[in-house]
Image (cartoon, rainbow, N blue to C red; front, side, top):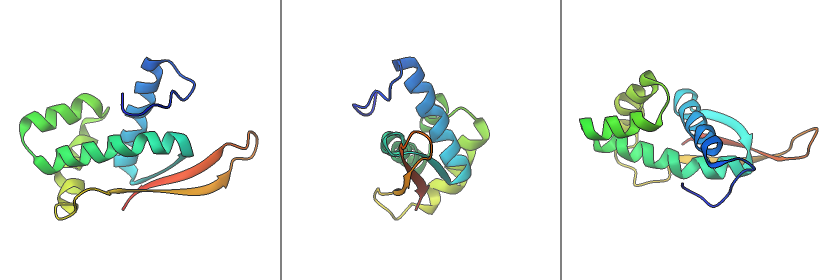
Length: 113
């Protein structure tokens, strides 16, 4: 796994959560989630974009093994990764937006730069 935060879930649930959030972020470009989840999603998205920059069938299959939608993987390799061709990392930004009403969890927006 990528980080040390367990997020109150079993390892299988945690992996499923990360896969879905990474897929949603690459699909929509921006998602709102808790701050801890955003910090866990960030390095995974960075690695997916780096795979997209390298191109190649092996890298496409590796990305597709983690991303849950084939059209999002295609979008990653055709649109998102070429946009960051000249950039060496730092493809995402996490911005805190305050506490969530109800349980006061700290919320954040993670977006592609």
